[in-house]
Amino acid sequence: MRTKAIVVHITQALAEGALIAVLVLGLIAGTAFAARGGNTAPGHGHGGSGTPSAGVCSVTPNPVALGGMYTVNGSGFNPYEMVQVQVSDSHGTQVLFPPIDGTGTFSATSYASWAGTSTATVYDSGKTLLKVTSCSFQVG
Image 1: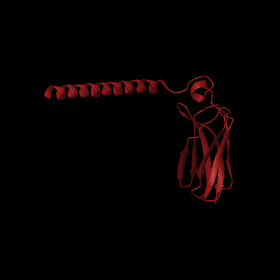
Image 2: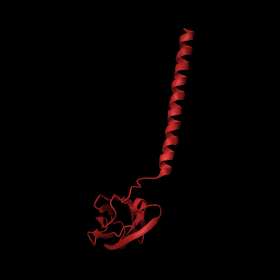
Image 3: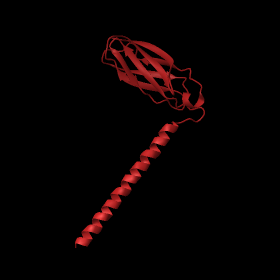
């Protein structure tokens, strides 16, 4: 009976060691893939093509009621480009990360939280933040 308990304990210890080894190898492989970077195929955003986009943006509705929902629309961007939209007002800045589709357009929705003029600035978020365009709208 004691021998059976020892065998079970050894089997469990070996299984636990194997699981830890798999997790460590997964972390090493994941770190290697992360260091390699993301999608760098030609024509897929600033990081891949090396060509910054010449997009434009607009906000609807304009003006927007305080507390109301607004949408920042963008077009003319590189397909699948990674961008961030920083919406600034007199109270602070919020950052949105809209996906850009294969036609180079995006829309990002949020709520107007402070009265006055707000500005949406679109940055190409490849290797460095590169300002692409901006557009302003009224809240109130």
